[in-house]
Image 1 (tube, rainbow, N blue to C red):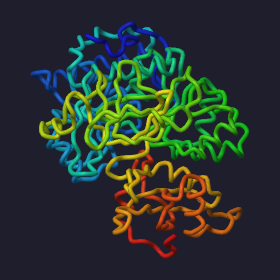
Image 2 (image 1 turned 90 degrees about the horizontal axis):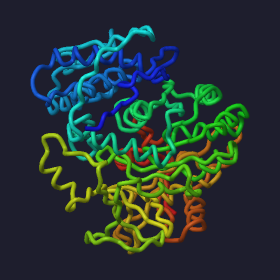
Image 3 (image 1 turned 90 degrees about the vertical axis):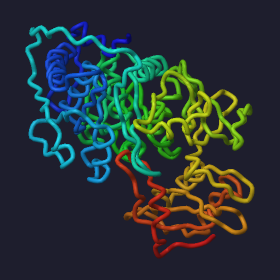
Length: 502
């Protein structure tokens, strides 16, 4: 049995969680979470198949609730507070939680309001107060979390993550990132998914370190925390984009980012333009890693490794990664050019899709999980993601082209603020490359580039066959809560005035 949070059981007085001016040490967290775990057990008598919904606001209460559920052996089902009614109804009917944990006063929507409710009341205990004995934790294969996918190809699927997967991923990142109990993590990510909850909250707790959650992201708050005792920052590309722009104008922010031991970006690729801006302003490089809900973390640039900007690094300890071609055969080339689908196996993988044995079986090729992500591998073993097989791999004129490299080339143009690339059917090419552009605006902006100028720019940066044949200009790109571009929504968008062929 792998104890998930040794510092809680050891009664460590070191800081653990801080949200605003509210904080708990590991000792205090044990004193609060232990009794809550007992109440969960009282309200959910029976077998170890108990599931507990968590109304996952970015609060101390959510963190305490998840820890208490994990201590009991219940599977926590984090719920996005911005979730739509139809999706919520599906998740509740699919996971059948026995009760819902929420902060006092939270107004829960219908399907959750109908469940038995347990308020998570966090009253800071006296540091001298001895926590009661914590429950005996279940085995490593016991479900820890059920995290629902975004449901882009149907109803969301419940990804069952065993305790083994959490422990392995967090310990592998300890190695790759040199993560210790002395680290203070700063982040402002939502707490209903892998990045914000597992890495951002449970990661520091497993290490015996601490996390400062900002509540809401702002460059000012990041600068304040990193100028104090923050040593690590977790963020998504939209956050780092804002940091990159502001750091070029704000010496205090640049200095604060430069003080950080580790800057980590994930959930989507960080454009090379933002990498360059941040390095120029701060002298620090941003590390990228690659993971999925079903696999947790697979690869990462190592903190003690060479500069690998533009890649997601090498496989984490204990994780096996391979590329396969369209026939499912392993690709041996490490030339940085041959594109294949990433497949993964290892102790970081999920157990199953809840109630979906058909989907679980279809997701595996033998013991290898089919990620649906396309990548190339270079001579040093670093992987570079080129996009999703379904939305980002464009087969045009006999070439396999990844949308990501075209997006990076477009973002290098001074007139482009945001860019997305998709493919659309073409009688001659099979698929044609389509660019969706948000132009730079404001008093300092130059003339807006036209479609031909952008196509020529890409052809010069990359190769002629990678140039966009159609360019649409938008005011903004559709994004989800994590800042990922919703390319399926782009495909459904009526082309606005200003679209042009190149």
